[in-house]
Image (cartoon, rainbow, N blue to C red; front, side, top):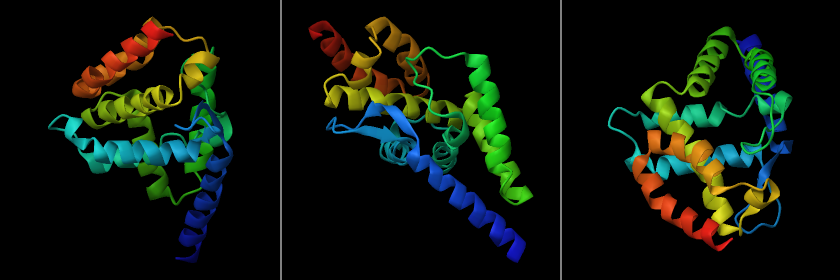
Amino acid sequence: MDDRLSAQIAFLSEADKLKSVLRASRLHDASRFENSAEHSWHVMLYALVLADQAGPDVRIDRVLKMLLLHDLVEIDAGDNPIHGEVDADAMAAAEAAAADRIFGLLPADQAAAFRALWEEFEAAESADAIFAKSIDRVQTPIGNLANGGGSWKDYNVSYAQLEARVGTPVKRGAPGLWSWLQPKLNTFFAES
């Protein structure tokens, strides 16, 4: 029992490092950059509040678990902004190695369960993961609308890029949410 608890506490202590990983996105008031732990909490809240946007086969309890775990790999791999220039293969390898190390801190049963949820989120093939991805993608655009463009300005993002990188997964997992967001994005980019 002591070994199991020690492993769990070691994992929780390591997870604290996510608070130090800064993202490319700013808070709604634009006062500072968001950290990855804040992002994870906020997308979980989005999923809980917007659960009625999910399809009938989506289990919100599983979505919340995926969103809680999805960015832990950034402790080692760092944040890779969606609109940044990133070597996708190198990033995937770095994140897989991070998942091995970080989830490997846990007792074997929890390590396997958490890693499976992380992999399911990354694959975005199950109904739960598709909805989780759509929620993960929609949080930053809503923030950027609130803060005057934020990371869109920093990365010189076009509406076409936003539609491809954000619109496609959001439409796939939460089409009603995209229908609500799209006119707001059209207005912002038309006025910018």
